[in-house]
Amino acid sequence: MYNIDWNPVIIWIFALIGTLIGVFLGYILAVKYDRSKQKGEKTETINQTKRIILKELQRIKNNINNCLEEADKLYAKNIVYNPNIDLPTDCKDSVVYSGNFSLLDEKLQDEISHIYAVIHRAKEMKSIAFEIFIRIKEHDDNKKVAAELEKIFFQEFKKFYGQLEYLLKEIDIIKKLLITPVNK
Image (cartoon, rainbow, N blue to C red; front, side):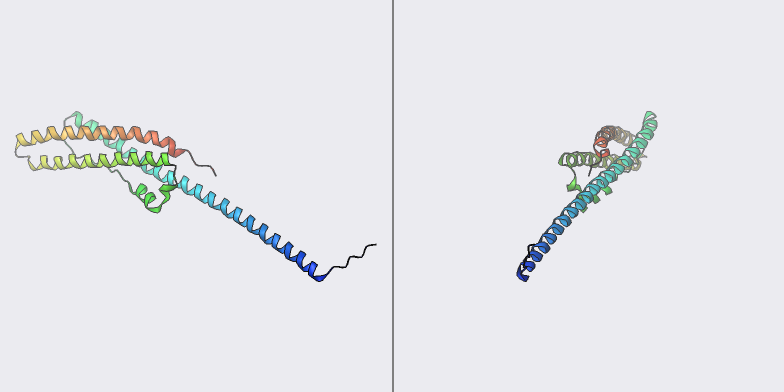
């Protein structure tokens, strides 16, 4: 019937157009896949960051509970002792230095920063109580000075104790925010 005379130039143009369309579609699909993969990696990094901070806060909470339990027993008997408690912040520091902290929601960043500020205040209060504890031990031979220092110690420890109780409440609040994973 119809005999179409295909000019080699027309064939070449159609081949070129087909090739360009194929390359363009391949590029679009590769970019879409790459973005999807990056979003998945970002989501996983956020969830991992939240888990790391949550584990550290849980460890701090356990340390606080142990310290308060011990303190209740000893202070009920008016025994002066050095509150031995570890309040680590290594995981949070690592998350901040790695840049992953900035991936978290701004409200969550504020909450985490607040709770770690409370932890640092508690560390300072512990240092003050420890310094007074050492001064009491230095004045064991002078009962009057030691008694005055014990009063100061108990006042400072009461502040420290209150800070730890406040910290427990704050950890419980932020725990709810950290448990919720970010979906892909």
